[in-house]
Length: 312
Ligand code: GDP
Ligand code: ZN
Image 1: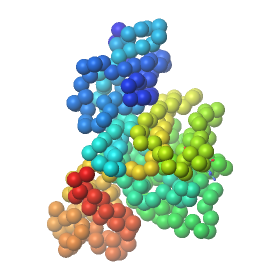
Image 2: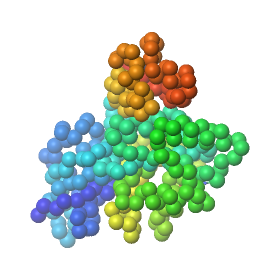
Image 3: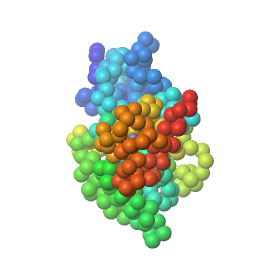
Image 4: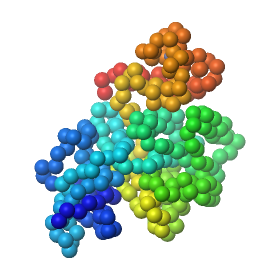
């Protein structure tokens, strides 16, 4: 019997797959499953994938996955140590949400920009969610406004929320309706608390401060998808907290294509192979000078350009 279903969870060897009638199956990969046609990632099947299964035991709901349906899109995480090491975090997404905080912990521009490049490469719409708005004080409000200024101007949607006091939750909930949304961010930004707040009665386990602020970070990233109860076609893909986000493996000459504010200006550079470093008549450098492009973004661009020159 052939069954079609979507992968909700992966442990590396087993997958939890929901069929079109809503039953969950425990499935493993068929021995001869062809990995080759599905990128060079370490995992052939990811959360969000639609797959074909063959039932082994109908009663116990055990099956083998024999094929994968072509993905609409997918998010690849590259290892911060070696960008050639890739792992597909999730596929068939409508939205990618990066949860960030200006304090406890601080999310750096580097982390944000590496993530945004990933969503641009994957062509997945993305929103930034600034959580812990209740902790914004005189001391950190300039950091907060800087994030708003930079990313709103580029055109990224930003949601300001507090999982603690409920600010911005309704509007975010509206945004997520009828979508399959990835949630990611540093450990400790409040992603678990936020998801629990969004979905009443839903109890993801939150970690104590000592667990997220200490060492012992996750090295592998296994995502898990949850249906939103009582909302049709609405799901969230949760990921374990991520310490660093590796840089996508893109051609150096194309890097600026994944900075939307730069992409728009490229036709105005004199040289069409301009890398926007030292070339004369560079529209990007002009825009930097007149404040149109943020210094933080340009600095990261240069940093990433150098990083891509290194073999790993
Ligand atoms: P995760 O690692 O991103 O899943 O973070 P958690 O949801 O486990 O939260 C980490 C810590 O931040 C916990 O102590 C939460 O109580 C706290 N926290 C989460 N959201 C907020 C918020 O909006 N405001 C404040 N002040 N604390 C929050
Ligand atoms: Zn240029």
